[in-house]
Image (cartoon, rainbow, N blue to C red; front, side):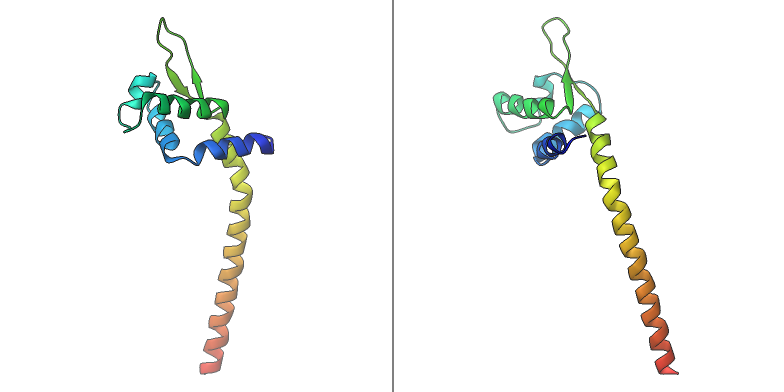
Length: 114
């Protein structure tokens, strides 16, 4: 995933309404009206959110007669997770070093008390 694509996906995920839409689509495909139902915003606003998600590659829209059901495309989320794993390893190493440091402090303290 290129940095621009990554920025686009993170930008799409930055909004809680869009994250809620993705959570809904994780349960299965839905029409715009079905997606809009729980939100206290206009259908037009939901459509704008869907366009952002579609541009980021997080959803696709099908065609079934007059319906255009939306579906989750988790591929970009996998790419984001892979990017994040690099930093997860970094923090795990930092925690390991911190654990070693705290253990050394405890040993030093025990020596001083005896």
